[in-house]
Image 1 (cartoon, rainbow, N blue to C red):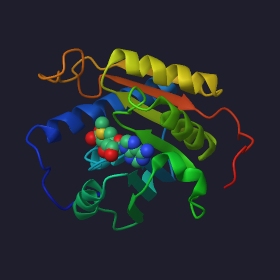
Image 2 (image 1 turned 60 degrees about the horizontal axis):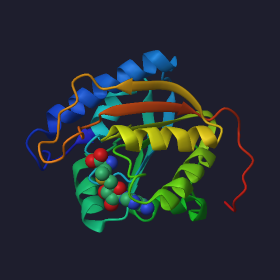
Image 3 (image 1 turned 180 degrees about the vertical axis):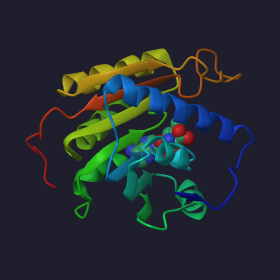
Image 4 (image 1 turned 180 degrees about the horizontal axis):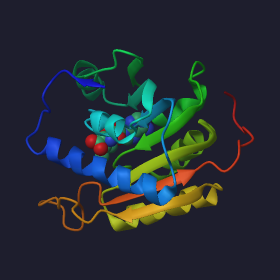
Amino acid sequence: MIQRREFRYPGTAEDVSRLGGLLSDAWKVAGFFPTGRLAVMNLACGRADETGALAAALAPAKIGFYLGIDLRPETIAEAQARWALPDGEIEFRCGDAAATHRMRQLPLFDLILIRHQNYWHEPVVWDRLLENALNGLKPGGLLVSTSYFDREHELLVAALKTRGAELLANLRHASSRALPDAPGKSVDRWLAVFRNIEHRTLNIER
Ligand SMILES: C[S@@+](CC[C@H](N)C(=O)[O-])C[C@H]1O[C@@H](n2cnc3c(N)ncnc32)[C@H](O)[C@@H]1O
């Protein structure tokens, strides 16, 4: 993964570097040893600042296909300008990450990342988004998510367990950077790894 532009904000490089360490720790706890060429999707990706850190944490596996989806066109444009994948396919798409079941050309994914999920704000939308994400994984594929605050993380974990996902790792980030204007919130405060236990019966049109 090639980063073609500097990050927009100071401190982002340090944040994503810490996230990379947290992902590596989580792989160990989860018993995940990345190999081969992976199809990876980043839902509600925003600027997708975490793209390089994720790719590095997946080594020695390579990303063969990477898709980022977000509602906001300006963040998608910025992600497109920043990231390149010379030996694979990369796409940033403006769209509803809760509607992946209607995106007919999508493959199944080895790993889906949701960094700084938003379950608290729109639980109905995020229930659908999580259901579709689980249905979008290959058998044994992983859903990885981080949260800014404790309660939102608990809600996400409960929502995924309810849908039959297996919680493989649930880490409180020891060096998470506190957000000065949001007490109780910090960057990648929690990270959870779920496995799609079996290939789920699709109850939706793909
Ligand atoms: C807290 S930001 C996280 C962005 C990025 N993952 C990060 O950690 O920097 C939440 C993002 O979710 C996006 N979002 C919220 N609901 C969405 C939906 N239904 N489909 C796509 N993107 C969505 C927002 O546009 C926003 O960029």
